[in-house]
Length: 150
Image 1: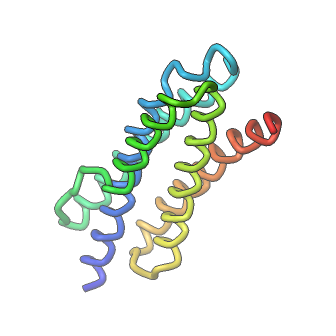
Image 2: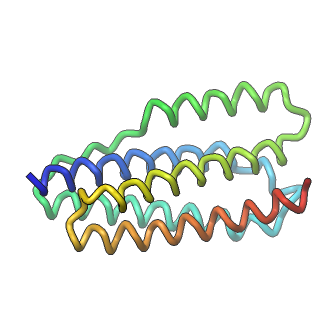
């Protein structure tokens, strides 16, 4: 029973990581003119997301689970909202940064819930905790920038 809970929780995190990767494609080239220093951080976040995705898939496979390599409905709605919002917004860079912060915060909360759920096996807990720290670090970079903008 525990194994199925672990796999389900890991698949939920995989869906969220896929949302994150898809969301990053919405960011590309929207903020670099105004904030060129963020490009390095952004590129690192994309690389980390792809590693996180691969690690989650490995954990699911190691537990004999079926990988659900999709994204969430909420993520798709959020990306759609970003498109609508950006079509009316005069400042795509600031709006984009706010959307990155929103998405990172949502991912952090989901990871925190997974860690607190008791559904993860010990090995998965270690990997998910490490990914949680990575999410918090990327969130902090963009949150600090948003505070400077306000």
